Every structure is written in structure tokens, then in C-alpha cells.
Image 1 (cartoon, one colour):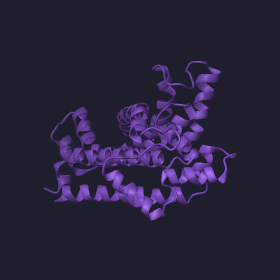
Image 2 (cartoon, rainbow, N blue to C red; image 1 turned 120 degrees about the vertical axis):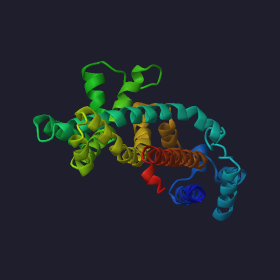
Image 3 (cartoon, rainbow, N blue to C red; image 1 turned 180 degrees about the horizontal axis):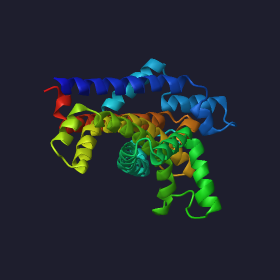
Image 4 (cartoon, rainbow, N blue to C red; image 1 turned 180 degrees about the vertical axis):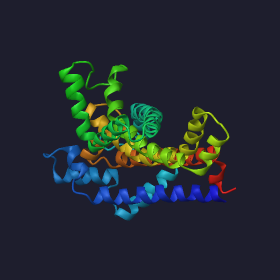
Amino acid sequence: MSKLKSILYSLFTIVLGVSILFFIIRLSPGDPIERILGPEASLEDINHYRTQLGLDRPMLAQYISFITSVFRGDLGTSLFKKKDVFDLLKVHMQPTLVLALLSVFISAPLGTLLGVFAALKKSTAVDSILRVVTLLALAFPIFSLAPILVLVFSIKMNLLPVSEWTSWKHIILPVLTLVIPLSSIVSRVSRNKFLEEKDGPWVQVLHAKGMANRDVVIRIIKVTLPTILNIVAIQLSVVLAGTMVTETIYDIPGMGLLLFEAISNRDYPVVQGVIIYSTIVYMSVFYFIDYLNKFIDPRLSGE
């Protein structure tokens, strides 16, 4: 029953979010027809094209048609590119998935190791340096961190390319832009959680039994994993948003650049398609991590 409730809750969340988005983008200033036909188009041509696309119908009728099509798996056709939205998503999702997955798979273990290391060196110079560095990393949002990395590694040192998506070298700077803030968050959370568990009575019992310090540390890390995974899941929405910002800055042909162009052109179907895709990915990963936590620690399942 709980799984069914989770599925129904997810569907409700997706439908609610997409419905709100549907009305927001249509009530916002700007007319996609005028952008398509240009400023010299006559009023007759604009009205004819609007009727042809069905944008002259009442908004409620448009919404019913849209939501019905979504449940059929039809995301519509791009107003500008004249291509099926699902086909556009398939083309542009690969760079986004690469950036998001690489940043998560690098940040989670890296942040955990740094946090545990800082906790083991508590109240030392190493701990203080790591805490200051992670705090500074969090102080820079992605849109300001990316230009700094470009200035240092591309312009000054001439080590890495800035744009395009043709080789592994083009991946380094975008991934680094995402890894720095995410690993800093994971590091600070894992440090605090490790110290909290380290002072627990169950750890004292392990020491009293003569367990080696290395094995005790591994046990503590295992206990802190659900908290770390939850932080990663919560930050996933930030990662997806950051990926889209990063793609725009580095001119990567992913979902972010597609969304940016669609918003600029008021391409309603593409904007809706990208948001639906992002929401489904986020909620799928969130529930996967939830089940993974229950597998790691069966007590979380309530059984």
C-alpha cells in the first residue's frame, strides 16, 4: 500500500507541477507566434498561424488537450524547430545525464572522504582548513564559479577548452563546476554526522570489545550513509538546475541549452517537455535512494 501511495503521490506531484507551469508560461509576457513570424508579419498572418497551432482556443481547452496528450506519451511538437519534443529530448539528454551522473558519482565519495578525514582530524589545522575551503566553495554560486574556472584554467593557464562537446577535455570544467559545491555540502554533512555517531555509546562498546580503529571507522561510515544519500537526493534538484546553468555557460548542447532557447522563444511544448523529464528523473532517483537507504539500514523501513 505504501508503494502505491508513493506512486500516486509522484504522479500527483508531476501533474500539479506541469499544470502550474502550463499556465505560468502562457500568462507570461511574449507571443511565440510573433517571434516565429517576425516583427514584419501582418496581423492576419499572425492570427492564421495562431489558429493553425490551436493557440487561439480558450486556455482551459488547451490545457485539457495538453494533459491528455501527456498521459498518452505525446509531448507535442516544437513551435520553432518543428520536431517532436520527445525526439529533441533524446538528442539533448545525453550531455545532461553525463554531467549530472559524473558530478554526483564524484562528489558523493569525495565529499564523504573529506568529511570523514576532517572528523578524524577534529580541532586540528587540517580540520580548520577543510572547513574553511568547503565554506568558501559554497559561497560561490555556479554562475559565478564557472567564469572563475574559465579564467584560471582556460584563459590564464590555457589548459582546458571552454565550449563545445567533442572530447573528454570539454567535460572537465563543467563537471568541476558542479563537483566543487556539491562535494563541499556532502563533506560538511558527513563530517558532522560522523562526529555525532563517533561519540555514541555503541561506538564505545565496539572499542571496549577491542575492534580495530579502521573497522570502527568503516562501521560509522556505514551508519552515516543514509544521511549522506539523503543529502545527495535533496541536492539532486540543485544539480539538475546547476547542470542546465552550466550547459548554458559552457555552450553544451544539453537540456539546459535546449530549455534556455525554448524559454527565450516561448516554445511552450519544449519547456513543458524539459520540465516533465527533469521532474521524472528527480523523483525516480529520490525514490531509488529511499529504497537504497532501507536496504542499507532495514530499520528505516519500519519493519
